Amino acid sequence: MVKKSAILICMNLNSRRLKIFAWVTILLLFAVVVLGYLLRQTSHPSSVPAATKYVTVCDEKNDGCQQTGLPYQDAAQPTTVRVNDLMDRMTDAEKIGQMAAIEKNSIRDPNDIAKYGLGALLSGAGAKPETNTSEGWFQMIKTFKSHSQKTRLSIPLLYGVDANHGHGNVPGATLYPHALGLGASHDPDLVRDVAKATAE
Image 1 (cartoon, helix red, strand yellow):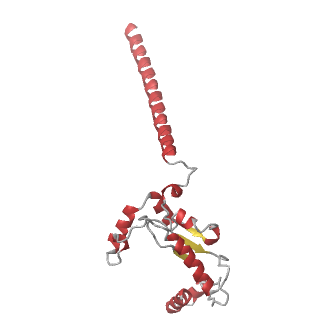
Image 2: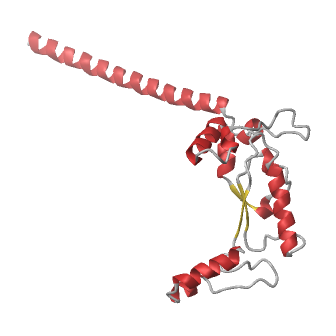
Image 3: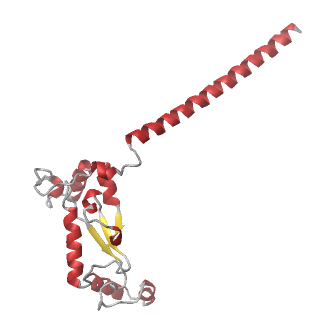
């Protein structure tokens, strides 16, 4: 009887120790998760856009802000050498900015192109210049691209337009059938010619 009581007491103690160990482990894990979250919030405050903190915009004097003669700027270098060199020089904010493609009408201040290091702008339906002519388009895109050259890395801006069946935003431009209609023609050469004519 005494032996049986001693075994039950030991089992009860082990059960209590196991419960305490489990609770301590859970609390420690919770503390680690909360601490990790707090450290991330402190090092990268969500209220401050990273690009405003890390994208360097050069003033008109330049003062050595934009370096020249770097491997990524040398067209004679192999593409992989140029890409690796540029990527090694970029901050995380600059990489994020380069992955962004912003709709043209969302840009209220053209200086934001440099400020956030934007990689691309897009003219969707109705996103056209004030003077909607070929020359107006040329000048609008030229102006946007000049702002992208104000960053320390001077990465050119990519400009896109929704012209999948002709440049419908420009008055007088030729419009072609949509992709479904072109596909129904079963004529790859025709599709290629339409794309080429639209690009030109």
